[in-house]
View (cartoon, one colour):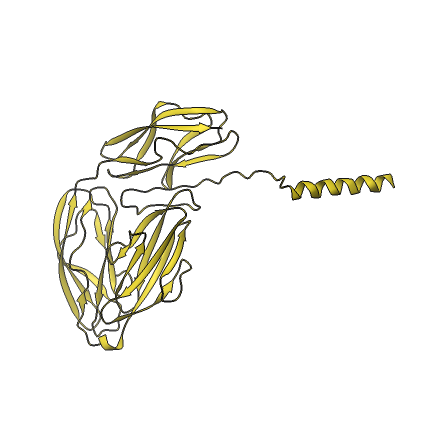
Length: 321
């Protein structure tokens, strides 16, 4: 009888501990990210970093997609980085002679505004189809101008067409002039669009002519892209005070910069990181990470350099509890 009472007592103690939440504290997973002023490069998941929302368009029609908060205006800008946890609403507006057929990807469905929460990289597709009344419209380009770019900063812009009597996928080609150095154009990107993308390598202004072929006819339009000097390099994350940590628990702090010419190189040029932490330099993101071993306030000079030798430095502090 005494043995049975002891076992019952142990079971009761175990159930009481579980009910009181006496569970081990999980460590934080590493999150990684890389971005620049244009916000096109980001990776990782969760609510602590910056992630990319990409909008693609398909179908036989045309239209635009905008976001709230602002940042995406596709046609022109179809990709934007947002802080983790941000709620973004996408709105689709069909072009003349087109109808919006609905969303796909990222959990978006239907034809009304689509709301997504940015906790990882997302791709959302918007389908625009040609309405019956536009079947005999001439093949033409929607865009008449293209945005400027900066040396060393990722550039991406779509060119869209509408109308035409062909049933084939629209295919695009350069028939005169040339793109800025470092940029290239896809033969198609979606049913009625193409993409010019890359990383400009020098200051220049170029004019070129694009032809589209829908299988039944062709159309051309001349565009100009101006590439400006690199934007001044600056550290955007962390600020003067990085996120705090706890002795014995895994720590990470993503490192972001804007401007200059990527990729970036990060280093500590004065002071010291908390013992147990180090800078990680990787293609999928630069960050400070590790498991701190010592309590205190640690102040150091955080420096970023770009590929042209431009650099930016700020004094940053980390508190370890």
